[in-house]
Length: 96
Image (cartoon, rainbow, N blue to C red; front, side, top):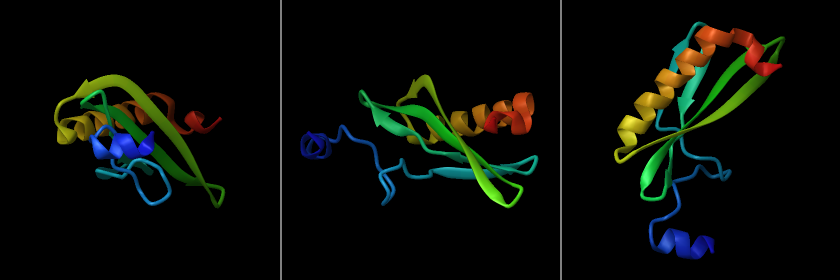
């Protein structure tokens, strides 16, 4: 099935480890927010990763939203915005 997805452009671009590729990255209040939108149903789904080193350990929180956009850049901008919102509202509690 993955062969057919890649043949017809249905699969999103992925990093070498199978995770969606990082499209944009920002630092916000000590957290790193990476936008990792992926292609779904012909559009790009909002997705990202929030990370921070806590006590010498890198913690990550992955998020996916239902929002989809025709442009990759728009999906990445929204993912960064949503990531900042999550950090502002929850801070380090996202890792518990």
